[in-house]
Image (cartoon, rainbow, N blue to C red; front, side):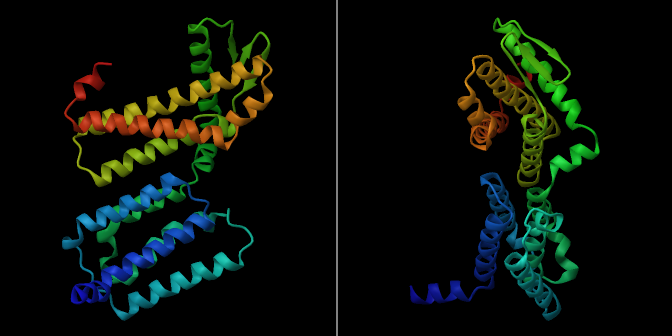
Length: 278
């Protein structure tokens, strides 16, 4: 038993896993990670674990020095920087995974880990800036308003929509920024990509998963918008502030993730006809 423990601790893969855990903790603290980001890290680690027999875990002195420099630079910048919301801070996850890879293999073999690099880099994508550059935020807000108006009208409320405004007789909400679906859409699409990289799916399954991820994001966020519109119309400001804030948004995000997981389960359980016939 003692011999087995000694061998395990002498294995360089144990130390790489330990360093990965420390860097995950670093990113959790400085990049303001949420649970989904940690899931992406574990997904990357699971890909490495499944393919470890295909990888070449043989680093050299040059690659090891680069990896150590990156780790010390991350720690140093994390301690002295006042702003952890800039572009460089958003790239901490990518620098972290690069450091681990330089410690684990030669520089010339880095791109054998392209699955892991891509999965972890997803945690640092600034979707809000990308959508703003592409001028998609306003269009998505209008689409959200249309869907919310349709839902409220369907259940019997006197409601109309003008651009990104949803108007009830006794109150209205304006959909913009974090209230729109763009954050949830980005999260759903990222999650689909992670699933594609981790698990082999057919082209039809990939398309259905992406399609339902989009429907889930728009539908779940529209239900949240309907709830907020009704709270404003009934002068429930405290309840509105809760569901408008991060705590309320996280509940709906969790619901969306669970629905995506259910969709994936239906696909892998050979029940695509159930999804495609809805």
